[in-house]
Image 1: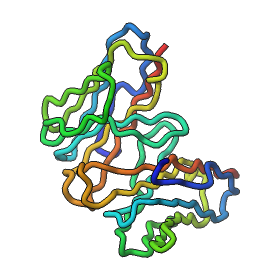
Image 2 (image 1 turned 60 degrees about the vertical axis):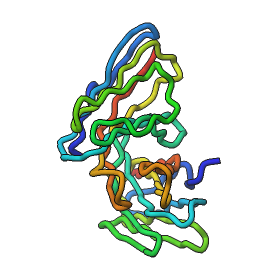
Image 3 (image 1 turned 135 degrees about the horizontal axis):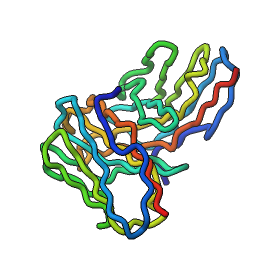
Length: 115
Length: 115
């Protein structure tokens, strides 16, 4: 079972609307949790990074929140634009891992913003 | 432009062919990675190089052979692949593996189709 589960798998919203993407994880505590945006046919790009002690982090219209009690992170997109259409991937880095490179990736949420 | 360049962007090869994927990073990073991204699956770490030395091989079949001639170049040599190896292959780099806040920068990816 993957240690990072994302929902919904896909989402369609109208331009200008807000939306929230969910990430449930089992790795706790962790070193950091990131949200990546991956445009179709491109590599992922980091949007936000949060440490275990942080509750929220914003990057423009993107706001990530973290609830360590429920082991959930959300990515809220405000006033969506057509260019927000992409896959959004939640990534959790465990602490003190045997491998310094260990990352747990979610499968991603595919967001489509329509005119 | 993330500073990580991959070529070719698209590759179609037969199961008996030998081909190579190339990655170059212009960020002065010490760690480089190969990831495999298949549809509906999380990113899978394949290989990690740190200071040109391979530090991780994530049980990857021998038909994938990495090469890191220096800290800014990484190759993935492909030989006698199977159709199920068709995927997006992402190269990435980071300053190093030690610090939890390190961002991993991904290239645009190489779309591989095995026929």
